[in-house]
View 1 (tube, rainbow, N blue to C red):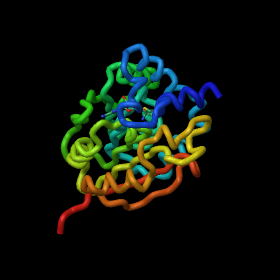
View 2 (tube, helix red, strand yellow):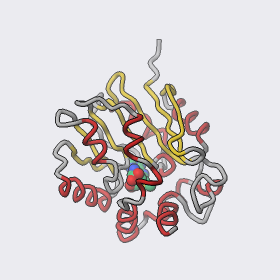
View 3 (cartoon, rainbow, N blue to C red):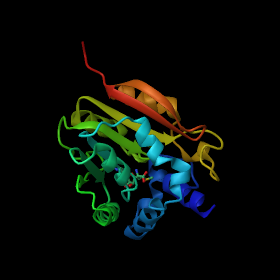
View 4 (cartoon, rainbow, N blue to C red):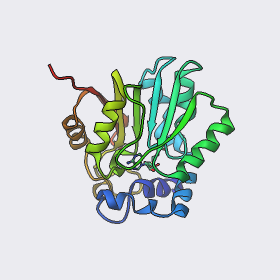
Length: 224
Ligand SMILES: C[S@@+](CC[C@H](N)C(=O)[O-])C[C@H]1O[C@@H](n2cnc3c(N)ncnc32)[C@H](O)[C@@H]1O
């Protein structure tokens, strides 16, 4: 239960979730360090099934992957293994406390194919036309300016690259122990609509955790 509450705090507040409210617990370095520790809790595996998620994404060895909003580097072991020794992973975040936690995790596990990028709230500062896949795991509802971010992510995708958005449904019971109706700004269909307005087309979607967390996969929509 403690873990559920901690995870809830990561994505939620007591107020209806505006973007500002979603980020209310990210305001001080101390809060961010606390959240980084909660994000590294291995009990998340049972709830969020990271290995299954990465398997479902069918990442080819040698791929270049961005973990957008990497937090404390929870996904890095899985992404690093999926791309293998000839692939590369960029773990990007906007907060130094999360990047520090990721740096420690990457060093502790000896993940030599992972590097860190410090982004800005409206620009992840990623290399252009680089990524075969960009993963946004529990990050979209934190974005202050989704359209600016989508434009930047579009620029950093390789021509047939995929953008993968994983987030909570805005539905009763979607976040265990929390009220997702008041905590999540937009449900899946609104999010997919926003991403498509940003110049992407939806190519696949499925439940990561039925009724709780969805996966939506996009490619850049090219003009004819
Ligand atoms: C709930 S945490 C998820 C972290 C990680 N993806 C995970 O699942 O463990 C949300 C993360 O989004 C990051 N974030 C918020 N706004 C961002 C932005 N504009 N660009 C990149 N990351 C952002 C936060 O710093 C935080 O690390």
